[in-house]
Length: 195
Image (cartoon, rainbow, N blue to C red; front, side, top):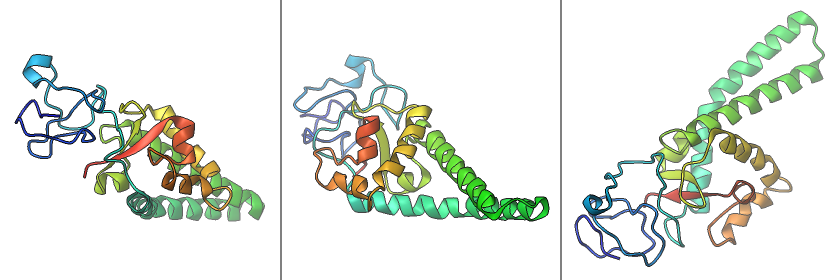
């Protein structure tokens, strides 16, 4: 297709023009494209409330980029986890809480922090956690729109199922057309990449 802003030919699978950065909002493969003035749509500078481009076989995040983003997010979350474990251990020592209960409380608090972290960032302006943002990834629904806070939280808890057994739910992305994991299928999401 041809970019309606600068006029260069762009492969149908691209979400934005590599030359001028103009986004192809709401288009499917093979669609024609009018200029922003003709359509009345503003020049998109990032992820907004409007529909983002549909992903059709291109610009989807692969295994290693997603694994790298996960590692960055994990390193960011280590600090709150250490603080949680410290405080739970500190208070349980003084209150006489059973060790198993203290561990369960710390695990629950850690899961809650992770769920809120993903919910806030994935439903926010970036449509990505800081780790995903650093690697140019975004989590969108299968129509190319931003996801809601609750869908992002559900997607996080779906990762627990993806990890059982032996992380096979994560490895599904290697064999699926839109590189979706089990939790992506459960929440109808995809992970796109900028380049």
